[in-house]
Image 1 (cartoon, rainbow, N blue to C red):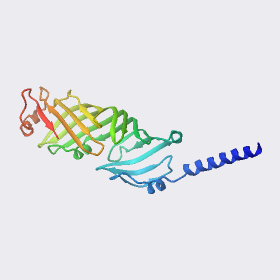
Image 2 (image 1 turned 45 degrees about the vertical axis):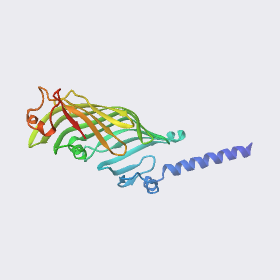
Image 3 (image 1 turned 180 degrees about the vertical axis):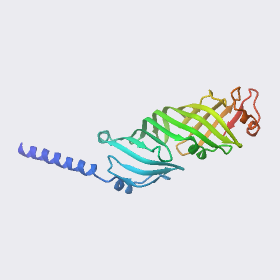
Image 4 (image 1 turned 90 degrees about the vertical axis):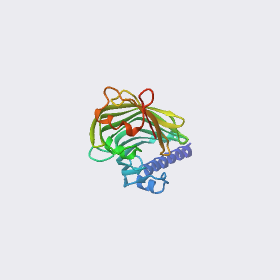
Amino acid sequence: MTLKINIALAAVIVSAYLVFVIALTPAALLVEHSKLPKGLALGEVSETIWSPQISAARYQGVTVNQISADVSPWSLLALSLAAEVKFGSRLSDGPEGQGHFALSQDKVEISDFTVQMPAGEIAPLLPLPIELDAFGQAELAIDELTLAGNQCASAKGRLTWQRAAVNAFEQSIELGSFKGEISCQQGKLVVKVLPDNRLGLQYTALLGLDGRVSGQGYLTPGNNFPAQLRDTLPFIGNPDAQGRYELKF
């Protein structure tokens, strides 16, 4: 009996020591011995693996600053990794937001995720048919998103662009606001712009996890269509029988 107690006590002490060592392991050491995804570059990594902090991360032209995470040790019991992540600041460029991330062997789950970013920093990243400067604030809110097998398995969320405005064709144009819905289609993330806006814009964009973007929709000028843009419509093409201008990339 005494031997069993001693063995159990030794196991507890060793386990506690291992947890203590892991908890204090520098996050930089873990990153140094990990293989990062292609195209991902990290700045300075500090603190421990349970509360890592990254000065900046860059991927596909987007830089995210001041990243911090609070990792749940209990998630490891389920052979997964869960963390609350925050990033960005109003005092720095790039996106700002937070959310819950859960990583398991076969999927990634994101929930209660919000990110805000000035529209002016997003426009240069998009394959737009014309050059323009964008203004206003874009916000993405994801209720739930599941990625599995390098594909979008399920998604529910919203995209908004408040106080939207652009400088294009030497014109300053107020656009009001735009709203969109987030979902999945054929393994790709789908952003569907709702037509209730000044441009009469109805558009569906598909984003693959490989970074490829495609989209198709229509511009239907109505009574609220900005007067400054009417002279630019011929640059888009000819309207169809319903007065719609097709947009595609």
